[in-house]
Length: 243
Image 1: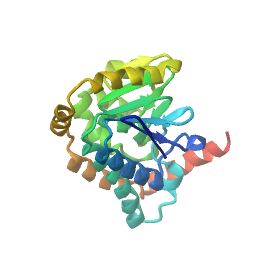
Image 2 (image 1 turned 180 degrees about the vertical axis):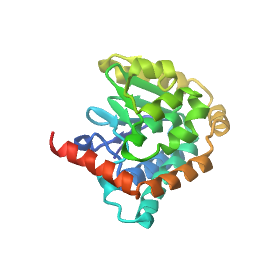
Image 3 (image 1 turned 135 degrees about the vertical axis):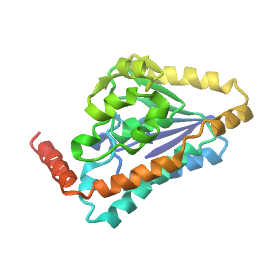
Image 4 (image 1 turned 120 degrees about the vertical axis):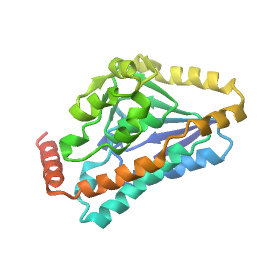
């Protein structure tokens, strides 16, 4: 994970491009710590994006498959929850700059973003059920953010385009692939014109219910250890070895 300070803007960049920025324990832990760092310094706006051709492909299936028992699974997913806590407690506006695919947990993170900007080639999917798992943020925060439109994504695992994601309300702006940074800077400029203390108050009122998410994450930890989930994760890993 990369942390860059550009003026009064903190950029947090997922940096496992060889794994499509899949989120392992270290990634979730780093995200949590960097969000807290940006929340506590003189940052006015936070931008979250990815390095390479993905924003994030979500939880690292290889890492989840290696979890040996429920205790290990709970420990892994508590690290995920720590990042969710940091997202919900942000006092600064969060822009998600989706530079490529956003799948699983990578897509769910967008539910915590204040403004989401995506390139035209980006793809979005919440396919956890294909692996015998559940998307904890999507099934708790999702209905509040998108209404019943979230049902389609979590119950089909279908991949959708950036334009479709905008129609659903998951994305705010769609731009040509070479205009992402330009659009991010345009939105930052609008935010910087607003009163800092007003923004902090607004953010406090917009906070999500993290306790709902915590319960769903613990259920995910249990599901990750079921025979069905292990079988589906192994099939996923084996399919990647053939390509």
